[in-house]
Length: 448
Ligand code: GDP
Image 1 (cartoon, rainbow, N blue to C red):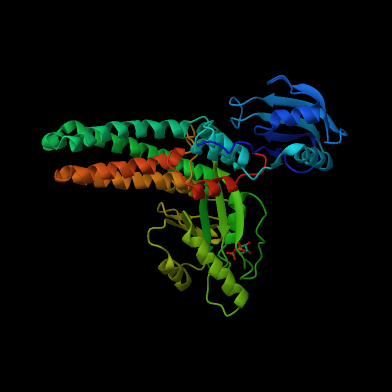
Image 2 (image 1 turned 120 degrees about the vertical axis):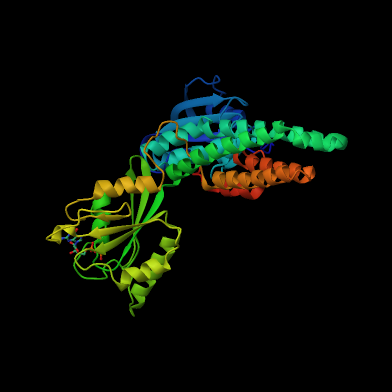
């Protein structure tokens, strides 16, 4: 694969607004020509060169540093020109317009990185890590994304792919020499290799699962009836006054969100509208949204007013929840109980959103349920897409194992292994399609 030749792109790489420096990037076969027209010469490769940037009429537009990276040893793998000028929106816009006048077109979001991928400067998992690093929601997520960019996920994926290739060549040999077929399938080496592969995959799946949490953050939904103390809990966990806390039932009519981090793990906390029977259409809409949120939650925090106890409202909420979803019941307002409960189960925790009591226990339990132990060492970010691919690979390996154990149909075994390899190939982009690429790079910012 390679980027279409003859197409030169330009974009402002720095965020809009005023700043000390603003950068315009130009990539493609026309980059050197644009340097000659706009700067009067092509800067020495990889040397910062002070230059005046001129429009096609020869009028100066800005003065700054120009850098030229000849392909293929550049970010995109193509000739790349970077102009670091003054970071004002008008100046940057004029530089960009001048570039277009010199003969290039506006880059689409993520197009520089997409070209880097198409020119084999990085694989797909690394390209995604570029966006994840820019969007990182915590310092730990940023470090994780950098590890993925440096190849932590890609290397492990490639190692699995290599082991799978060896196994496949064994099995395919059995197909090519049918007279020896049974022998080869009975050969314990094939079984051992498959077992080893399954173990390695399991480990990678665990790492990638943690990585996805780190990249996306976990979704926590706070549910409970009005006035149980949901908004207060949200504020307590977020340590910030975001939700409007009032003593009037039903104030949280919409869904409130808060982003915070739990030992580096980004958390998206959602406070749902009080779930209870109501005729009010606004409240009904709020409740509809609350249920939608709950369907995509990783953990539900069910807040109960301990002074009132659990009742029908809580039972109704529980009845509607997916039984597979972990629910932590929080007995709130224990500061108001004359004899607060001392005993607690791991998923039944007495708290006070007012005083902060029980919060440490709650946080520890959340970490447990998410299998996140704040041991950040070696953690790399991964995406849902990567996990899906690994899970599909797992399914095919299981099927392959079944065929191997049955010992009768080596072509089915071979086919499952081929499918496993295809699934794995999607992670680094060895196997890909236009649709997937379009979706991945559309999420990037322009100029990256
Ligand atoms: P929500 O409707 O579930 O979001 O409930 P709020 O967070 O708005 O709280 C309802 C009322 O209960 C407010 O007056 C809060 O100050 C009070 N409240 C919440 N948590 C506690 C708590 O732990 N202890 C006490 N004493 N009051 C609380």
